[in-house]
Every structure is written in C-alpha cells, then in structure tokens.
Length: 431
Image (cartoon, rainbow, N blue to C red; front, side, top):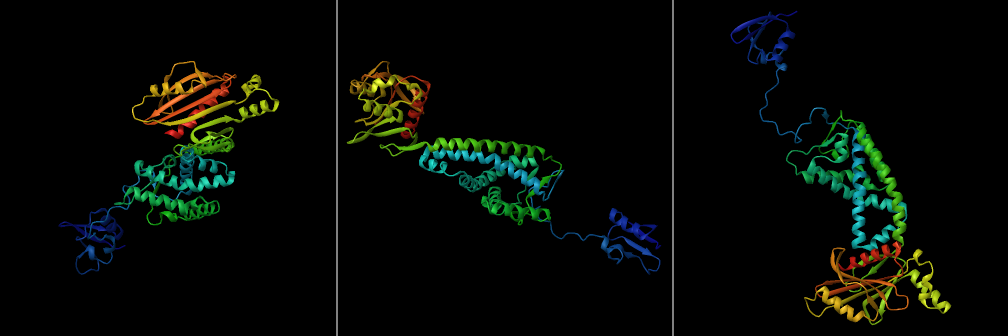
C-alpha cells in the first residue's frame, strides 16, 4: 500500500493511504492548494493538480446558475414522477365534478335565452346528445380548470390525488395553464371524440409508464406528485360522482320527455321567446291586432267541441271531472301608454272600465311581486254562465303596460299550479 503525506496549513500530516486522501479531500480537510508527497516523488506537489487527485475536486462555477425551472421545489414526500393512474384519477374527478355543473348552467341559459335551441338539443337521440355534450363541455372544463389552477394552485381532483402543477419561472400563470389544459384536451383526451379519446389515453399511458413525459408536458414537466398521499379519497369520490352521473342520465331522459312536450311561444310585441307546454293553444284575439293573444288548453277546447257536437252549452260540461283535467284559458294583452308617469293603480282603473262587461272583480287590486316585477293583482269571475274564476295581473314599465288574465274552471291544485307556471313563463318575455 502506498503511503501518502499531506499538508494542512504549515503542518505536515500523515501517513495515510490514497483512499484516505480522497476522503479528506471530500470532507474539506485537504484543500485544493495543499501539498502531497509519497515515496518516489522528487518534491511535494499541489494536490489539486496531481494526476491521481485532480478529479476529486469539482471545478468552481464561473457564473451564477439560473433560477430553478419551477417556482418552488417540491415539499417533502413530493417528487417529479409519471404516476399515470394517480393523474388519471385526479383528471377524472375534475371532469365528473365540473361537467354536470357546467352542463346545468348551459341548459338554464339556453332555456331562458334560446328556448328553440334548448328544445332542439333536448330532443336529440341519447347517444348523439351524450357525444355532443362531451365534445362541447371538455374545452369549457379546460378553461375552468386553468382558472382554478391560476387562482388556487390546484383543483379538487389534484388536491385529493396529491398531484401538483409547477409553473416555469417567469411564466404568466394563466397563459401557461390555459395552454397546458388545451394541450391536454387535444392530445391527452382526443378532444372528447369517442374514436380518438381511448387512443389518446393509451398513448399517454404508454409514455408515462416508460418514464417519458406526457406529450402535453414535453416542453417543461410541471407535474409533481405526493407519493405518500392515499388515492382512496379520489377513487371514492369518482365512484360517487359516477353514480350521480347515472342518476342524472336517467333524470335527463325524463326531462327530455318533458321538454319534447314543449313549444316555443314568441311574444309578438318584442320578439322574445319562452317555453310553454304543448297543450296550450294560442292565437290573436282578433285578426286586426296582435297586441292581445288568446290562450286555451287542449282540455278546454275538447270540452267546447263536445258541447258543440251535442248542441249544449259549454258550461253544462263543466260538471264533468274537471279536476282531473287542465281546463284553463288566458288573455295576454299589451298597451302602449300615451305619456309617462301613469301608475299601475291608474292603469288598473282603466282596465276596470274596459273589462267590466267581461268579468266582475271580487277583490281589491293588491300589490304583488312576481318574477322580479312589482305588479297589481285582483281576482274575480267571468260574467258568462260558467262563472269561472279569473285572476288578472297588471305590470306597468314606462309606457309599456301588460296584463295577463288567467281563467281556471275549478280551484284544484293542478289547475292552480299550471296557472302559476303559465303566468311565470309569459312574464319571462317582458323582462
């Protein structure tokens, strides 16, 4: 064994073996400009340039290293890793959680502002409707997830599965996450198209299990996972959400049946649309004006037809089982007032004078609020032999005055509920 001597400051130390010299260099006791000597050497030599030890020293950096590629290092327990199944469960929870919420918001918006589009979509066959929803919702979900990551550094699914995103230093967070989510949408989910979706999932899975980054993370790997975080909560939530989706699918079929039984009515005054059950029939009260629309249900028209066929009066048939039918009629009217400042009370007095021959008011005009409108309402009964109950609602908006009179042929709960739904639907068109 070769014996070495070395210097520490002005002192000579040794003897030690070659391996011990290397260990002392690694510990910092022997510095680069210290001297070493062994038998066979003519003179002491600087250890940092000696052929047997120069590789032990790490060359000093001439420049300061750049910032780390991510904003912060992973906490204890986190590591940059592929973890395909952990990432799959995180993504699945996010999609199944946000999907129904966004679908409901879109459905309510279409029903309120574009009823005809809502009816067209709802009447589509189920497989086609499911594909359309998946393809349409995934880009919207991508935007929602990007906003969530920008604001909170995580999403519900990632938080449960222990997956965390990393933003490269100096990068705009929102733009980074938007770009990444749309890369995931395109190459990770195949844009939700049934044919390309499984292919995209398999391709990304094979990349991850072979220790390569997913194609949407090739430029910079922003994913860290907490390998110690249990996946059970994420999987349990995914199962619960899937059960909820099955329930919503079944309810969706029932709702579609209900929507298909709807029709679009367009307010002739302002062109706004609303949905009415298909058993409501409507036409202008007279051909010379469209400011007054007359409505009647199928059941009422059937009673009228039956009375005419037997040569009896319509009122004679009302002793039949009316409570099991929806026997209603209505009159929707609009007036353009001649000047501003006419109060609802003043307009009500005008209506009393004009409609006194058609109905008898049995209550005072009382203020009510319906669909966000401040209105006046009174009840009474018609002056024809049937003496049906009449409820009239008046709304004044500037120079626009609206009135809706709904006649019900008994006070059954079904009649009352349909009267309220009908009134609410009509008032949607004057907002």
